[in-house]
Image 1 (cartoon, rainbow, N blue to C red):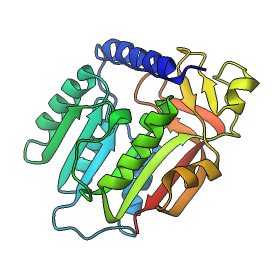
Image 2 (cartoon, rainbow, N blue to C red; image 1 turned 45 degrees about the vertical axis):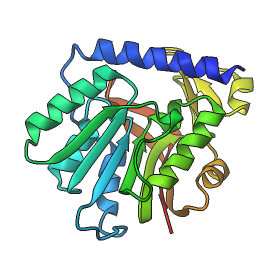
Image 3 (tube, rainbow, N blue to C red; image 1 turned 180 degrees about the horizontal axis):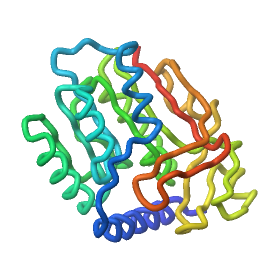
Image 4 (cartoon, rainbow, N blue to C red; image 1 turned 90 degrees about the vertical axis):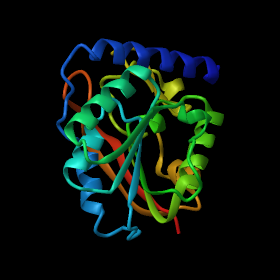
Length: 240
């Protein structure tokens, strides 16, 4: 399996999806993961005077919109793979919250995060790079970068596919699943599925503070409610 080539195919499909979805109204309904992140804030906060949060894979801006609407931080940052999503997110967030500090830019996070060390109080990724980076070297680099840009006490939150879930939306391929991937019927895009052990190993030395099994995801694109029985992880890991 040439993971570099497959990575490029995933990138192309994201461009196609964002270009197609740009014709529709941006969905603002929050998903389960972003609501959990709000609830976690009071228990895991670096108490910064200017709290900074980064979303990896901000799409059209709906998750940052929800955080801004709930006064989660003072400064908001987002990166996404496609220029189309960056343009739409910038427009949505600047028009909706003109007085709030918000910085959105295009980036391939498999190549790194262009921020200083110990910069963010929290970083989150909801079914984005953690799911769709296929190349193993890019994935290792991504996790290393997340750990680098987090402040001490900062938390990395994620929502991603769980190996062991029921994927009725995937093309049956036991060999592919054994390698840690599924291929979606919808668009043949590959997703990385994780065991608990893999997540702990990728994120060490971050401290595991929450890892729970979920079955529902409110999608940004396509059918809104997406069910995979025990098919998702919600996780929170803290830099100590």
